[in-house]
Image 1 (cartoon, rainbow, N blue to C red):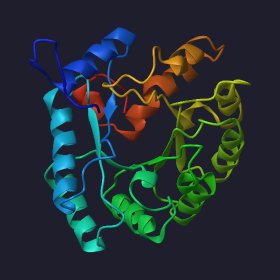
Image 2 (cartoon, rainbow, N blue to C red):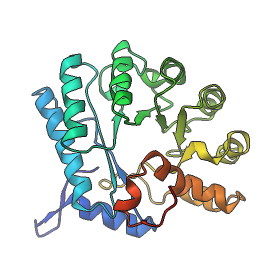
Image 3 (cartoon, one colour):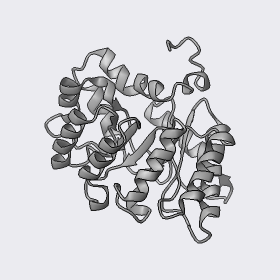
Image 4 (tube, helix red, strand yellow):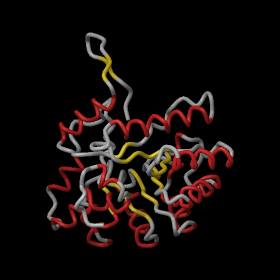
Length: 265
């Protein structure tokens, strides 16, 4: 999500409108929305609640384009506060999953408090989206392995994991050892065609299409991961798994919001 922009005349532009225009420009039908993690935390849990309210409202404003919204809870908040917020997210906001970018949230990915939050999410049937940027020691692959092995019943999605050539090799090891981990394609380092190799070794059911497509400011001129996949020689069924089928398996509720009423269960 990006901040609202303004035209030269000073009229307000809603972020959802900017985001929709970006999707149309790149030929993308829909997107999962996720909070920005560099938000103001001056008022503690009140800021986190406001952030979660905003992301749910973003989804609800146009569910045919933004069918899924992920919320967050802060690992440095008390467990009781986090538990209460997860309950509110599920019961009141019908949030679809939880996400963390721990290098912006003050802890390592496998910090003991993250184990508690993974359990909270799993208790409520929420998938967990975890950033794994290759240049961050706080989001190192070993910490994902620690979480995945300690929580085999959790559904974990590693974001930005293919962002470095060396890290990709670690991710292949995690994919082999931890069947509960899925991986998104955002910021994929394309040399040696790692996505093709991943599908060859582990199948296409473990990959989710992702572009890190912030609406404003737009971080790239073209979604290179999309072009890399379109240019591959993967079978059509594998491409469909990556582009949308796996997403609907993680979030079956998205089918109705997208109008895919005839989609197989």
